[in-house]
Structure formats: structure tokens, C-alpha cells
Length: 242
Image (cartoon, rainbow, N blue to C red; front, top):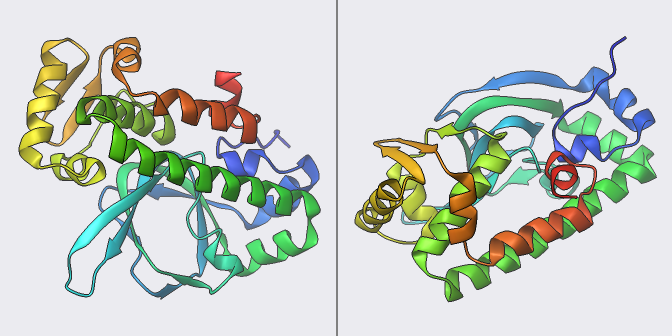
């Protein structure tokens, strides 16, 4: 049997024994743009672990207003926290960039978590990374200029979605993630295009000069990379950054 070597960070952090025991319960599925994996207050039946693609987590207010609060790609998962607690998803989860993901039934995931100290350690490390990244994101939003954050978010989207150069990122998505108007996004994106950093069209961003984006990104880019090197050294990005 060929060696099973997934790209998802949580799966890669498992021991060989734990990964092989979980493997029969993993199903590789396609992710299509706009696909809804969870609505607010849906029960957690599946845990999703992306290989390629990007998921948006959206908080929906009582008024019906909605805000994207985080993105998830191959360095994380959806439902892996809730499946161990309330068993309820309190965000809407949709596919932002198409790709593929492994999914595992919540009951099988919980059983594997309970039976394996190595898996518990891997999940706790992922939780630590998520908490540190959330704190960094709050500081970034309050302290850094929109242009710097725009460059950083494009790089993050590319990294987390699986290294795609051409990404179907809508203007609305970028505006919500950065907390600015769509007009501001258009202005910044067109400026980056004039510099030769990206090619920007409606609903699509193609990265042309990754090093140029790195130079123009805020310091949070380097801070998050450091966190990944420390907390997920065996993940795809952790190994690439080492």
C-alpha cells in the first residue's frame, strides 16, 4: 500500500500509527465555490480537513448581517474543535476557493481523539496556533495600514489554499476580511496591479510577484510564519519555512 502523506497540517501532525488507524474513516471530497458546509447552529456531523482550497467562517447576526471572521485552509480544519465540545457549529462555513478536503465523521474523530495521546497533543497544538493567530489578527487590524494588510492577506490566502497563483477572490470577500469598503479594495488592488504585483479582475486575483508582496506586507506576515515554524514544524508551511 502506498504511503499516506496528506498535506493537511492536523493530519500530518499525527503519528504514523494514528494516521493509519484514522485513514479508513477519511473521505476525500471536492470543494466547490459557494458550497455551504455548515449553517449557524447546525450539528457537527463531519470534521473537514482541507488539502487544497479555502473555507470562510461567517458569523451571522440576529439582524441578518454577516461578517467573515476567519479563513481555513490546509493548515487547519473545520469542526475539529466543536466536535469535542458542544457538537454545534456557531458559524456559517462556505467554500471561498475550490479544492479538496478530507472529511471524517465526528464520532470517528472523537473516538480517535480519545484513544490517542499523540492526536490530543496535535489538536491542542493546533488550538494554540489558532489562538495566537487570532490575537495577531486583532493587533494587525488595529495597527497596520490597509495596503500592508492587503498584501499579507493575499499571501495568506495563497499559502492556506495550497499555493494557487490564480485565486477566485471576490471583491466582497477581501473587503470584509480587511474591514474596508469595496471601493478601497479596488483602489489598492489596482495600485498593486500597476506595480506588477498582481493581475486583478472581477472575482479573480493572480499573484505575479510574490517576493514583491512579501516586501510590502506588514510585520504580522513574519510573525505568523514564526508561529507556524514553532507550533507546526511538520506541516507543509512549517517545513517550507524551516
